[in-house]
Amino acid sequence: MEDVTATLSKPALQIGPYQVDPPVVLAPMAGITNVAFRQLCAEYGAGIYVCEMITARAVVERHPGTMHMMTFGEHEKPRSMQLYGVDPKTMREAVKIITGEGLADHIDSNFGCPVAKVTRKGGGAALPFKRKLFADIVRESAKAAAEAGVPFTVKFRVGIDDEHRTFLDAGRIAEAEGAAAVSLHARTAAQRYSGQADWSKIAELKQAVTSIPVLGNGDIFSAADALRMVDETGCDGVVVGRGCLGRPWLFGELEAAFAGRELPTPPNLGEVSKVLRRHAELLIAHDGATKALRDLRKHMAWYFMNFPVGSELRRGFAMVSSLTELDDLIGRLDHDAPFPDNADGPRGRQGSPGKVTLPHGWLNDPDDDCVPEAEDMHSGG
Ligand SMILES: Cc1cc2nc3c(=O)[nH]c(=O)nc-3n(C[C@H](O)[C@H](O)[C@H](O)COP(=O)(O)O)c2cc1C
Image: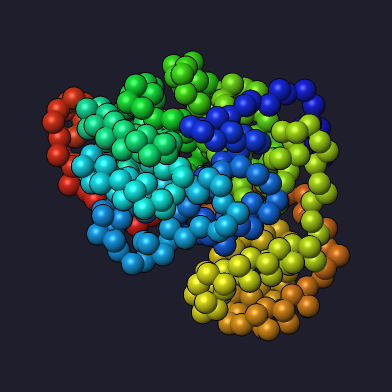
């Protein structure tokens, strides 16, 4: 295995009042980063573990499902959540509810969603193109959060496409309007999740934004990737998404690598199935068996990726409906099968590149007084 513990000096990441050591953040992922998954990851290493994204409007309307998503474990410090919104007033109101009721200690915001139903209305990754609106949202939210001593951070992409790169303006605006840190997913919206993240954009952002931390995001699948990103870009911390799907122990590897320690040995199939079992228990405690085991299916596919698990057993795991059944299937695995060499690489969301759908005339004037229409959003980044 590559020696990643070599020479790098670890960045000191400070987000508002929180010292984040190691400088690692679990990327918000809709449908994934619920309280069970966050706890599982946090059992391997420290960092900030961001909750699934929720919409500002759902908070303001106190949507019961949304309030349930804002459940945190006792171990979570800071309790970190992500808001999505396109209207400065709604965002401010949502932040005030969250901070006023002490529901979270860190609020991130999502300006990176590339999904057509969101960008079509000017939301997600389309929004930072409207500089005034973007500034209004960040200012109103950051101000409301700061009144309660809660840091507000901003996550965005490189831009809409290669002709409309917004990340440098977005970073400078976020810095000027009171954000405590920015994170860059180093792809354009047109790229979706395809191709490679362009880390040179993270380096450019780091040069442009000097008074708050700049976090890099995109294609960290191993501890070596994380150290290389810090080394190549000078970023203050790393945000890890798909790399930990079916690999929550990646956070242990990151902690070891940033501390200059030797990496733990990758787990064999028996050890992986123990992690899966723990994941199931945590999910069931939060959501009940039916929902939890349905949710677990996608994770099982990721846990077993590239392991020698036959198709009959895989089908069994995909249909599992109780912990007893799960235990029975786990008992039939070849526990000694070693961690596969080719286990790195993308899991989870893929999506092919393509044109970004925007509202009519959206690209005419970045400084107009646009009134956004989009508030609904279910998932994305
Ligand atoms: C299943 C899935 C759901 C996501 N949901 C969100 C989200 O709700 N908010 C957000 O800002 N990004 C979201 N993202 C994007 C990730 O936070 C991250 O920016 C992206 O996956 C790139 O990082 P990676 O290469 O480490 O995966 C999502 C990504 C995936 C794979």
